[in-house]
Amino acid sequence: MQSRNPIEVNILIVVIAQEGSFLRASKKLGVAAPSLTRRVSSIERSIGVKLFARTTRNVELTTAGRLFVQESSLSLSHAERAWELARFQGQIEIGPYRIGYSPYTHSAFLPLLNGLSPVNVAPSDEPSNIVLQTANTPELIEDVLRGRLHAALGVGPISDRDLWVQRLGREGFSVCLSRNHRLAQSTGVTVQDLHGETIFWMPRSSQPQFYIQVAKYMRSLGVRPIFREVRAASHAFEFVSHGFGVALLPRSASRMSHAGTVFKPLTDRYLGIETLLFMRRDQRHGEIKELIDELFRQLTALKIEIN
Image (tube, rainbow, N blue to C red; front, side):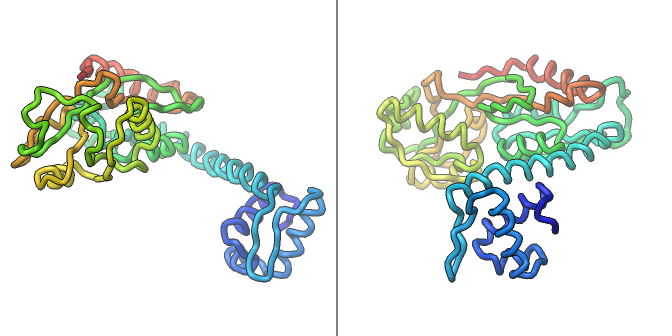
């Protein structure tokens, strides 16, 4: 490994930072530890600043080292993305087209996704050239940017200058309550009613921007609920039915039922789940553009606006 190659230098420094040890990094890189130490010293002399503060037990990044690793990690991520995008370009012509969707996508959208077919291709008994897969919105964004998906439906907000993003619809929340809950006889539930309540809701990691947005809005109103993460509505129903708290679910979830629970609409119009369709801007051409534009037309025609 020649230390003057920028990509190889980036890999070398990032691996040492990740491992926190020259010895562990040397094993991972397949380089003798003394040789690795010499290379890092050479790099530091070339840059004119120390990247690592060494002790007898471990290695820590200096301030300059942290800046170096931060930028190097981004460049390595972009390099990896470039490889995947090149492979993706080859898949466009032969398919299959891969469309992703969030578990929080409104259920009315799913039949259209399942019935989607490439433009100008007549229906037949042949297997569909469309492959669907589900993941959380951050994973969908990463998969679209890296070319593993052609497009996806995710939960807003989504902001990335490399993405073409279009709004499909918005759905309000319902609150799932035990039949014995103090709010069970109410016609609706306000945000203020949730103060101090234990709320079973989506994991923060699944929709971080949306989660932060909702929590920040509640705090701005002086509302301090206790959030408990659940990965499935069925789990939330069980907790609620036993009186352990309430669940915050999409309005469409009220069509489901569970013994001992009732649904009440959350009356606040500022809280809701916004579904967005997105794809890479630089892929907005040819058959894939026609396919996604047709999908966008069909999905927006549903007019999903539930407050």
